[in-house]
Image 1 (tube, rainbow, N blue to C red):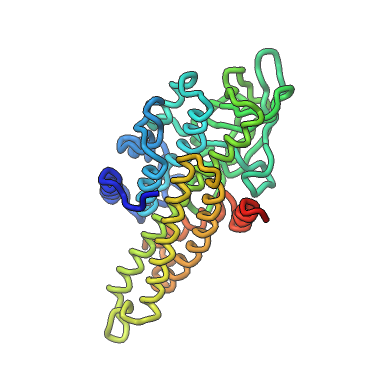
Image 2: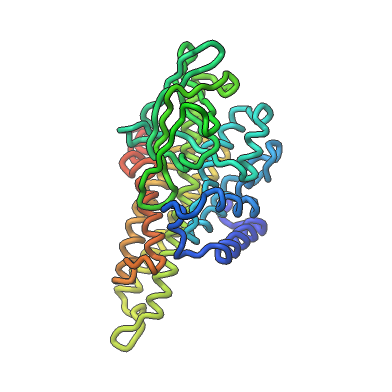
Amino acid sequence: MDLILSDEQRQLVATVRQYVDRKFDRTLQGEVTNGNRSSHETLTQLAALGLTSLAVPEEAGGDGGSLIDLALAVEELGRGGVTSPVIASTSLVALPLIAAGEATNRSELISSLANGSSIGTMGLLPPGVRNEWSIRGTSGTREGTEWLLSGAFNLVPYGHEADVLMVDAELEGRGRSLVILRLPDEGVSTRRQRVIGGEPRAAVHLDGARISESRVLAVEPSDVARSVDRAIDTAIVLQCAHTVGACEAALELSVTWAKDRSQFGRPIGSFQSVSNRCADMRSGIDAARLLTWEAAWALGRDRPDASELVSVAKHYLNQVGDLVERNAHQVHGAIGYSTEYPLHVFTRLIKAFQASYGTSSVHLERVAEAIGL
């Protein structure tokens, strides 16, 4: 893995950073999570920048960038406090479709995801389940040439706004299958759920949702688990990158505040207890970034240790998130809790990340299993 960014990657980072700083106000970024701004609006803006097609292969109508390229861009979104469907659409629908060999059969669908005209997502958490790898939440019965799907999911990213929903279903007489629904399909209802921050989420209920055989992906039942695991791992890596950006923003705010805020006739940053807190944040963020890059690199090359590296990055960033939010608020004092000051946006992003795609205990178990324990 090359730790030195190429000229193209540095230009990508600079372009996204300039765009985000110009187009998005950090103090308003809670609007998407709170429902005051459309996710489609944000996605359209980022599609114009090329982010929705960045990691889609050229043969599928994308730009052919790597997962690390997209992670670099997503980190800048996190730094700006921007939540968007880029991660969900790319990792949970577009890339799984392409990996399943559906680039030709579903070129129109993949194109709509790559150009940002559609939002894609996946149902992963049935009611009462807190682990994305636990059980399936959908079953299907045959009726003539069609399937009737029943099931439910909680906390589906962008579930209330999505145009495309992928689910892992147990189909009668066929076994485990990946199925595509186009929303709003008949028999599918959604309800927005309140979350602390990050991606907006929704409950999705399937009650006899009727789909044709053409909506079932050509993936062998024995390969479905691997496809779903790969989609989740990709989403985790990109969420890690986004959270690294949020942590970076919290550090930037803290350093600026420590320089500008004075007590006892001097900037508070000149006091060792304050400067050490900022230095701790710097160390943790840099380490988390490198782990995220390594996981993205391993996934992009389909290495056998990719899932292990993803869990290492997620667990470590969960810990770094605690460090950053604690130290940033210690440096800021009372103003850090004001919603008129942007620190709360990044605190919420970090907290939402820690609660998504597996807690540290889940990822520690995955790592322990990978190393033979």
